[in-house]
Length: 292
View 1 (cartoon, rainbow, N blue to C red):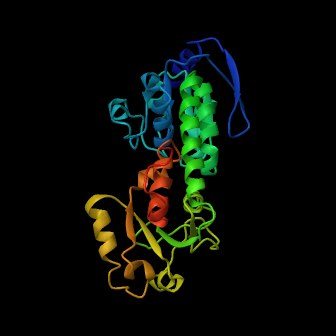
View 2: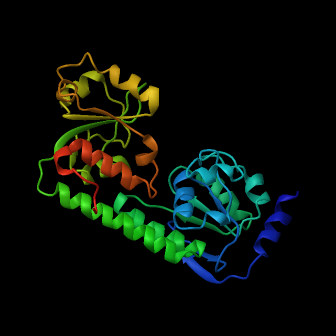
View 3: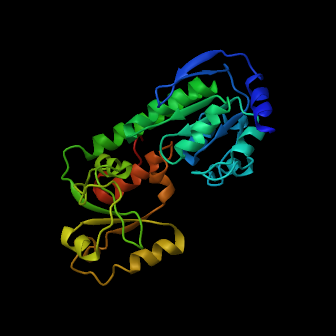
């Protein structure tokens, strides 16, 4: 019984100052410079802090752990299942959601309760700078967003320049260990491999994140293997492949551990992930950081 009055108070905080079209094609009326923003995804939180809107973020998910300042923002529940009550209690001027990860039902419930919800969505890495600019406009931080977007575009252009004309190296990306899962050309990570100058050996599979067998990986003969993981967990993942000397990547010592946050979150740090992939795939092309 308390939810609707709270949502009514939220709508009364500011007069509408702009209309934005979100990734669902909805027209959303928002205040000019929202002072209270709730982020429903880790990559959205990273974008907001990167464009200088961190001081306006009043609610994030339990998975929002970067940058360090984001850890001090109140939690509003999980990534796929945010708490409607906690979002309402944050009294947001705008809630920024995502097409991938947030449950459609949760987003629709927030909209039904009268909250101004902007749904963000980038389907390829090249679209992230555009999305950064859109979120900058929504958050009233267009200047900071433009600077961040241009840095990303510049870094991607430099990576493309360095890998241009080079042979596409066969790459296996291990998304998950048990069960063994990889990525196809329907995956965001496939796009990263392509931009980095690699050839995804499982690009042609029918689902975005397919299960594969050890035998299938061996038969694909990847020259580089990228395993998603961090720290001791990552080292353990690599050691499990040591007995498969028939795989070129194993024989050549080209098994690498990727910090999954750099590629699985479509935000500013994904450029670091693409650059790291590029250095592993084409090490001779990266004697210095892009742009220097």
